[in-house]
Image (cartoon, rainbow, N blue to C red; front, side, top):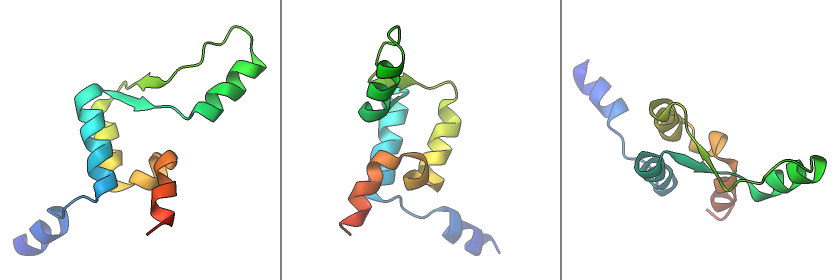
Length: 83
């Protein structure tokens, strides 16, 4: 039983997962989609476009990066189309 548990949970991360994981771990921020920021700025003259978003719960974001990277970080999904 313990061997099955280890085999299931000790798998290596893909290149995308490790890149996102390392970025979150090092900076505590996420890159924001520039097109969404432009749309928000066009709707409101007061809105200041941002490039990065500071994370409130870094541990949860790291977990999301490990479990579902392409679901939670859609700007990386273009890389998977080439594979």
